Length: 418
Image (cartoon, rainbow, N blue to C red; front, side, top):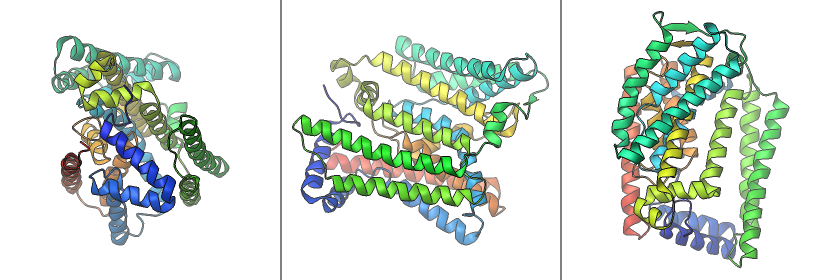
């Protein structure tokens, strides 16, 4: 059984219809296809992009420093750690499950890094690897409990939240706080490593070229298979538009410190996971299981393996996010992974467009969602407003995102695309 990226035959039919429009009408066909998808309830990333633009405009009006290059560089660095955790949340939500323990797992990873570097004398690389392996082992445990005993993921990860928070406190010891060596490469990577302009521009060109090459190669494969293909003019416009956008962003950030290596790592992880989700058998299986477990099982998909692999990745991303957060703050403490880490990681995935009902979403949801959340936090900080306002606004935006998701789901059902 072949499935579309969303695992829905209705979506595959819509994709074919779009390609026919684009082939016959060119750019106009692409616009018409987009309009038809929106009317059918397939909003994609449109609501979050519009919301992000509105947020930026409002904060820029209230404080002209918001869109300054200095503040935007800070904003990108603030997004990287929690955004990395949110990638894992996107994966588990695609299965229609949840992980409430990502904050505790990230805090435990930070504690392992701190103790390994300062008390055990480990090399940085060894401490990082041990923390990531522990994160993966936690995800494997979750997967086994879920697949072997049928314990709901909500209950498993809620228990993990408490258990691994306790383990974090145990690892940190009585002091409860450890300062990381500032000269260690992981701290320098998180705080002081920025790409030179020529490298950033090179990556922008490479990204646009990769998009163009991918679309052309896909069109070539479809042509050889006797299937319809889109117009090359649409591919050119998409690639050139992406290149122009990236060059503008790089040039503007370069007026300050430039593009941070930690944020670049986060973006690369998003792109890599999007590739695996959309271009591999494993990714199609994730969407299929999230769409319908029984249908996926009858199609020959090893459902339990999919669940276990996703739980492992979710906890590993949580551990990596914890390492990045502690490196940026140069410390591991009782507050590592606490506070609103869970809230922001889960909210970013949902606000970015990943459905709570499973089967619909994208790795880019983590990027878009964390940009929205950190923009709100950053903007309110510039306005010297209390954090209580930030929580209320973030909660309202999260509720709005869920409402849009529900309405979109209802609209797709009425158009026969659910």
